[in-house]
Image 1 (cartoon, rainbow, N blue to C red):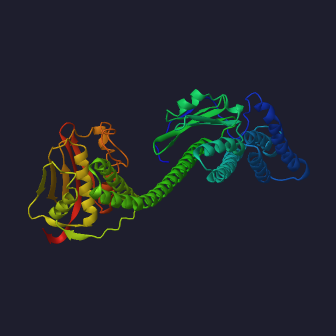
Image 2: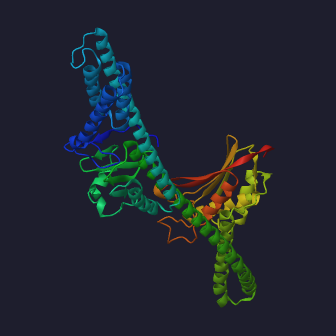
Length: 503
């Protein structure tokens, strides 16, 4: 997770990977080491002084080996003490005049100084190597713990379950006393137990708002914001023995990625469930619509036959039945069309066709509906032919004209247009109704959506524009609305022009 380098605040000396050792205990713990270092040097001096006579060079090399051993085993401080004792012993017992700390030969001064510098330098190098080895071992253990944590969290399910497992496992894996996590999207706080109580809910929420990783060694706790791609997910807190700063940052990144992955899996599962639900509903509606159309056809045929023979007293009732049967038949047709759109079963049979022919054919089928209205066709001259499925595009025009008739006052004129814009032909239907409010325009093509003002006044299912949108998008084109409240609305859709075809 790439982010700008964050400030790192430390409130006191930090203890990593073990218990903190007080300064008052340090001399007590190191005194035996100093004594052992002095005894080791004394043993070498006694060996060459009493048991095995040797020259100063042999003694110096032997003492140097002892000092390196002390440095490798305990550290620089003990090796420095051993070096000073060795220099004094070498001077006293092996350099002329023996038995005094006086040096007569200037060469012995050089040899003694060289021995001291070599011993201290070698001790420093040995201490550095030992320290680096210890740090490398600590990093290796932390990497193993991170790997163990990654493996444990990879199989987590939801985001909440992932966080709950994280606060439990991070305590076991890293040996902390407690852990807590604030999950911002759900405003939930997860804790490993009462040991995490030193970090309050307020502390966690505050940590999510800053960019800093904060370690308070005096209270032995750390808090860090959890972010992914700049988006805040929450905050993490650890109490007790704390891992290194790098490991803390790695933990923050790990939990951010894991939680985001869990959220993505959840979203994908919900989307798939919604898709399956929509497929099921579409199949059910399609089946019901087909089952309804069969008895409707029989009812329509029977009513039509009765209307020709009915007495005047019965004619009004039969006319109502006939009209309602037409409405039910139209509803069934819309349900079937909507089911086909949602199931992606629109099979286009594209042909080159003139835009004006499509408009006239659609208006001819709506003769009764547009009775009493002046419908003006405005088609740009020399329009190229359209490359489309004529039957489906006629249905789009019919839906738009029917929608305009429903939602504009009776007797007001309509305009159906076709113009060329670039390589597209844009067709439109404009009315002089009350217009569409701005907040409703983004939903106007949604299934079952109907405006507030006409929801209970105008008959309809709210599927017509959704069907028109599905047909246009199946052609790879788009449909949109332009409206001004009080001035009317205009619905437009684009279609591709046929290659080389002129109207």
